[in-house]
Length: 223
Ligand SMILES: *[C@@H]1O[C@H](CO)[C@@H](O)[C@H](O)[C@H]1NC(C)=O
Ligand SMILES: *[C@@H]1O[C@H](CO)[C@@H](O)[C@H](O)[C@H]1NC(C)=O
Image (cartoon, rainbow, N blue to C red; front, side, top):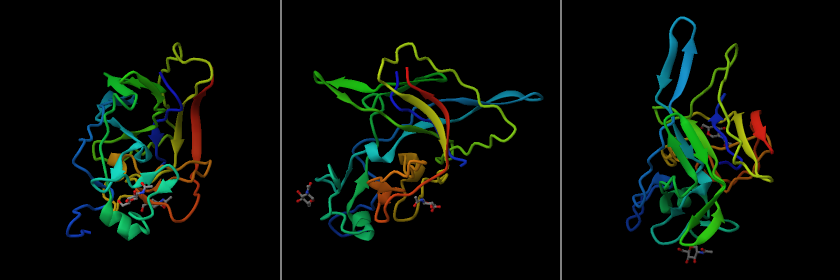
């Protein structure tokens, strides 16, 4: 299991030849969120199962214009994405195969793998995922006066690997807009206290440099 993993509990052109709105979900791979039921408990009402699932971060996805990736090793493809509007017109974001991304769930258990092997080749997938509510937005945890409870199995987390569960103050919708409609359902909107420079910020190109969000680390595991 693991790698730096996280439930993100947010506190909080159509061009004639290219029918794509950026960050409009593409049609090559369906986005099927692995179910991960969570529970809300009160002394009077007991524990009530919540219809929650997990979603892989936006930056791990194939974002393309139908033929070419809109992401390069050094950022966005500047021909396809010279600016936000053109990028929105050109690019679409695909769903992911969660098993290949190193993420699976079974009942209320989540397993994450740092490495995956495909066609005899092992590579680092190091998934980062967020907790999604039934409305397709991130779950906003209101933890004041509450308890957050979970179990972590570190027994197979090897030396040098890091698994983490933390809260970050992200937009519940993942910054969803009419020109970047994928939003939280495609894992957009990541932000943390290390002020990351993301290639894709809020599901669109990051033209504004680093940005910061409040973060509260709940469980960072360095065996
Ligand atoms: C960027 O996109 C253009 C247009 O599709 C393509 O010709 C070019 O090879 C791409 N560049 C990179 C670095 O992928
Ligand atoms: C993402 O979008 C949300 C909602 O529009 C906005 O409140 C937030 O500031 C944006 N975050 C960044 C880092 O641009």
